[in-house]
Length: 558
Image 1 (tube, rainbow, N blue to C red):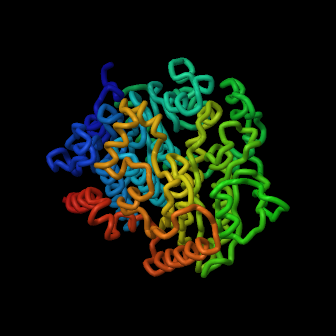
Image 2 (spheres, rainbow, N blue to C red):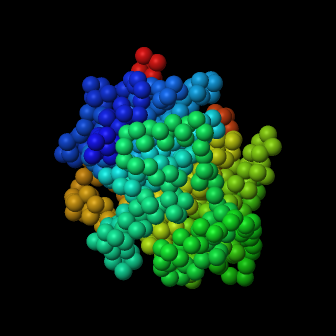
Image 3 (cartoon, rainbow, N blue to C red):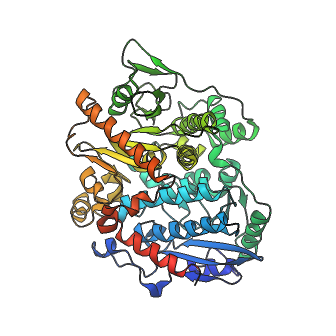
């Protein structure tokens, strides 16, 4: 097609948008991903990310594009660091009063599974920067087509101010093959192309308020839409829409699959109405059975806590050096939403956590000292389901992630305790926006982007091959000990080798949380830079990240 934007590669897309662009960290800098080399995978000299600074219609702009033809546009350490460091410089420019508008071209499957945990860390850091930037300028997202925007980067798309797409685009958290692998072909048939496009395709995503504007596939049309979004400072506040969606969900029967027509009719006529906060009180017997529930009970001192929303818990606690808020997500075997019965983070969980955390923000916004937030992390995954994808589970997870980030950026120390599993989009929504992470040393804890079975299917490797590769690349391992090598864990409680909330274990955890809160206070740390500037990160875990950051600083004003 003449002047097709979709048919362009990432570099040509960037050049088509900018009037006079200057590429930052170009292929000649040879900052490649060593994690790929270690697995015998041929890298790209730009790691599949093109970053350029220039002007659009006379306004300063930063354009970032993912190359969908390389590793499915997946995000790893180097590619993620290029995006984060560029956005960080754009943020600093805006803070100085020098407006620069970020435009991100999404052509990505999300986390690059060959660097899994690096991808999750990077995506959380990208989201953090987007949320900070939106205080100054709109962050514009483009989904042209080919790969679309999936996985953790769909959460990123929902954090953006305004999302533009062509009819060739798709947006969703879980790819069809992954849903089929995790939930079965009856839940989502990955061979049914009509089902995929009717659920995840851009025309439907406009109907369901997930994409803001549909444009024709031409350079001219897309650039015109971007210029209008910048000039009109468009922002649909999608990541602050908990009340709208919670009142919508209350009106739907989600105990069975909805038809697309039913959902479109419901969302078209829906108006947001106030939804009361969940209440959590003491009960006569335990309301759930999970690591997350046990630790929530121990850290709040509530006896048999029971929530009016069976999967979402929060409460005040005086067990720390400062009064704090503790949050947790727990299983509910009787949950009418049948894909969310084992502690997964689904639609209700994401939007409810967003609602709760925004309430805390409003309560503390005029206080000099903001209360710490303690996140009990025990999340086996996000929900894999048809209804979840139709409605937009990635939007729910974005609401939770955005609310945690907003609190941290406002001065609340956010401390995450990895007491159980920390998997994929669930971890992005509930844990990875923490100022500091603390972890127990239990062999039962898994930290990863995807189950081994699904990762094997997507990467076309056997589980044995994935496990063998993890010996060389800690970022793709599943255990907590390898995760500590990445530099993301502030405090690893080596002596706590089980997950039980015993008196001894609880005392050690409280001590570690108090120390983490003090560290955040002393350093006035409201961002996530401690993850890649600590000694473990600099010496081993985030070496390439720091190389990229240094190079970006060198080239930004060159």
